[in-house]
Image 1 (tube, rainbow, N blue to C red):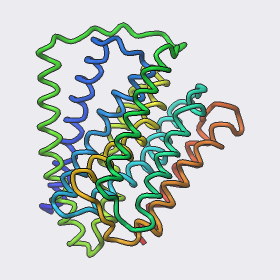
Image 2: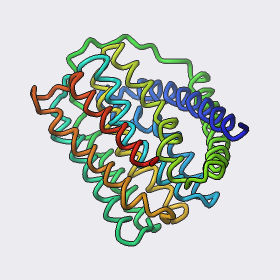
Image 3: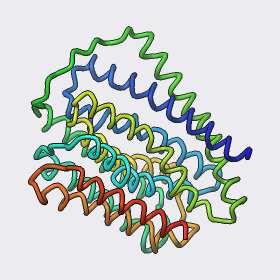
Image 4: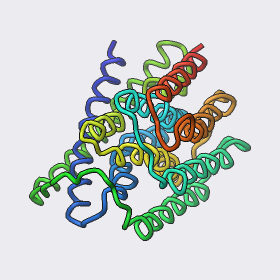
Length: 312
């Protein structure tokens, strides 16, 4: 019971911390006059990936590398199979050409780079982590240089910048809540794995990854409600890129990550590659550059079957 409460308390702190960090990040980008499409792919993605980053670094340092890996792989699957599915079940999304020219190819490249680094030797070394972070920085430079003029047809919402002290307060509160939440979540997750007699990987892939994906779900649903759909899809693809290149890159640079449970390499990583690839045909068929409720049902079905296979 105590472990379950730790997981619950950790998730509440992570979600609150992610939300405060998101407010501060969007406000800073407003102050710097960064265009919305770039905010979606960078600022929002980084802020909503903060829970994964803190949990993964902490888990790896505490000697639970499978929690770090399972959290990222599971979050990437949940972002598309659960978060994107719920978003498009609520409202169809018209996809702009950045999807096939930039966002999806970069997400697939990041996924394949991760696969290449970990599949053959079961470890992400420090130098591989550094390569991943460098790839992320190059991607960010590309976005800022070439997508600054991206136009969003939807009505611009009048947003007022926060006073500087509020932005600073949200940043500090967000950071503290994320760190405290990650400590509670890891402690509870390891306890649950021991209690149920399963590996840390199974708990990470199911409970922890869904929990750390809640900020993405919240950001995407709010984006749909406010009709900011460019932020919604860009945020999810950007978040998957950040999870792989920033979260695993920084974590493995701090301490090399070694696979402890072979199920991650024989099962989970292929599900992640599969659902990442599946997004492409869904966007183009049956209607070009549009995701609707039928696609949502396919994605949810894919995700539920993945969870079933992983648990059983």
